Amino acid sequence: MEFRKSNMTDLPAVMKIIRQAQKYMRENRLDQWQDGYPDENQIKDDIVKGCGYVLLDGTVTAGTAAIFFDGETSYDRIYQGQWLTEGEYAAVHRVAVSSAYRNKGAAVTMMKHIEKLCLKRGVYSIKIDTHEDNRPMRRFLEKCGFIYCGVIYLNDGSKRLAYEKILK
Image (cartoon, rainbow, N blue to C red):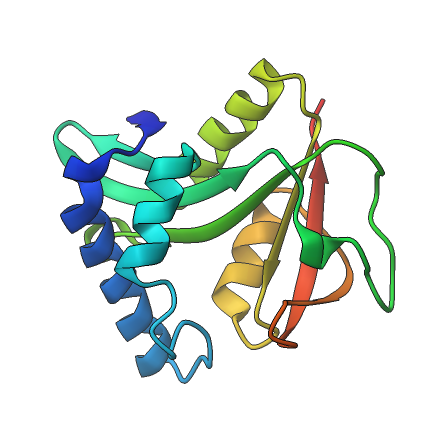
């Protein structure tokens, strides 16, 4: 599978995956991504900023994620715990996999590509957060070697569980 920066031609496929993820969360009573987030403008902004990525299986878009190397303000303060490291890190957001690729290893493959991207840039820490009720994502993060670090609050005040992985 190929992992590359997304472009505007990827937008329809990425939005399809986002809508599938929103539906999955709704059907599983997860109160995350149910307010229209992320919307098309957010995904376009990720593409323009060069932080939107897609996982491709041939010509099929299997997954998407946004990766930021310039910090995340909501990660500046962590409660009920602490980050494993200080300094430079990659923040990963908006991780979603096509329903056709769910539970088939695509998310793990995408995370391995994200790790390789970080290592190429000399970044040895990945930080990510998720809703406390999003048990599938929490299990996925733990499966990928992420460690629960504490609680962060988004700019809108929403509580999220924070995880970090140190790369070697």
